[in-house]
Amino acid sequence: MEELLNTIKKCTFCAYKLPLGPRPIVSAAVSSKIIIIGQAPGSIVHKTGIPWDDKSGKNLRNWMGITVADFYDPSKVALLPMGFCYPGKGKSGDLPPTTECAPLWHKQLLDKIENKQLILLVGKYAQDYYLKNSAKRTLTETVKNYTEYLPEYFVLPHPSPRNNIWQAKNEWFKEEVIPTLHQNVKSILYP
Image (cartoon, rainbow, N blue to C red; front, side, top):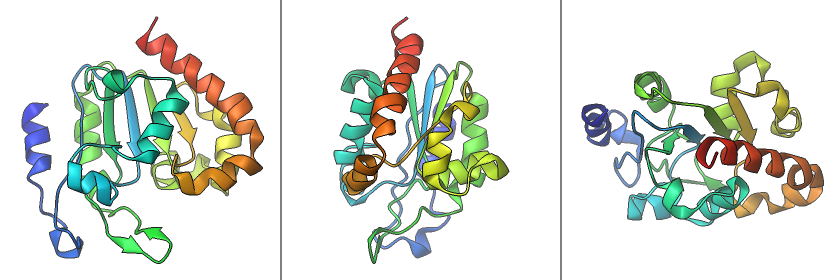
């Protein structure tokens, strides 16, 4: 695993389109139990080199009911974005994740993780890639039907503060989905 992670961290495959240059952000271990597949690092994470080291990460940890120490313990949680590097700024937020990383690296990483028990698909990019035709028409519909994807996948919206309006419109998310996520995480990490 270490050799693969070192190779990924030196990757420059799509450097030509990265405004701040390549800085692949990934964390995993052979023993990871929960795998979080998100979008791509934001500018803050690009600077710190720490995955989910922003408000989105804080929200995600709260949704999961997990400590910071456990979240960043690769023996417990693997952190794999769809695009491993910061893609740059768009009109209304960051650009979409680069499309090269997932096909290039995900299968190799997932094949090495021997103890995976749950994969969190965070946001539409991860859901579309992994669920393919079983994803619903919209992210809201996919998340509302989250039980269809269990026990392998747990689908979530992106935890960005930009999605607070979405959460306010979809009270069922806090009332039903978050408690189920807590329960799943607890049964895996804190049996």
